[in-house]
Amino acid sequence: MEETNRQRKIAGVLQKDLVDVLQKAAQDGMRGVIISVSKVHVTSDLGIAKVYLSVFPSDKREDIIKGVQSNTATIRYEMASRTKHQLRRMPELLFYGDDTLDYNEGIDKSLKGDDENPIKNPSVLPRRKKQ
Image (tube, rainbow, N blue to C red; front, side):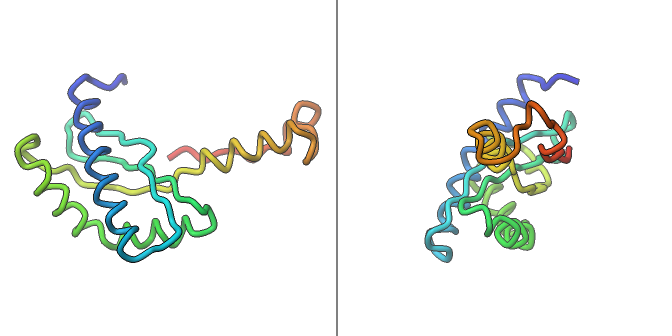
């Protein structure tokens, strides 16, 4: 099902404000870590927002995602106070790690010849999990 214009607008508002909230948290407690919100999907009933986070360096991704998931209530409260004039009800936030950069890096490395050639042997490319 295609996203409606309203879903896209709300996703954009959430993405913009989430970047501010998460970057502020990263500056306070996590030096040398960059967190970006790569995509936000809002359900058709506007009740759930799936947030995909890209973390650099990628070896800290799992720890950062777990930390963000454990602080979801605080983040949702902060987001609700920021968007109180734009949204009637704050959607539930679900956070996921975005591995797109790692996937692309693996493809680039394979195409440059650093790994086995994926064109000759496509089974060397990892299968991506859909969420």
